[in-house]
Image (tube, rainbow, N blue to C red; front, side):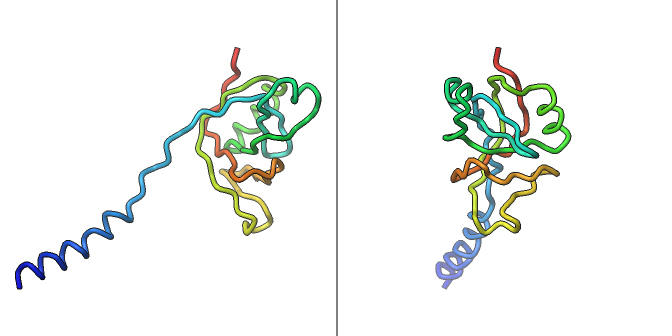
Length: 123
């Protein structure tokens, strides 16, 4: 009987532990940046960027104030954006994701978008 109760107690405890999700690990994304409204697009190749070919690219955003400052000062440069990837869903209200005041519309039409925490120009 004690074995059954111990097994039952253990089986009840395991799901509670399994439900705890660790915070996403930040990832560094690099590319040439284009700003469009409240989102940015990272283009992988300088040649594509210069030619005006915006795809393939990855859409993303920074918190609103950082997004606006970056758009005013960093355009047309290679950058490193540190942040997390968010899987895109076409079921989002208004077909956009509000990230700390910035609306990400996923103009690149990718499977994920970048939720940026930091941006820096690569020299």
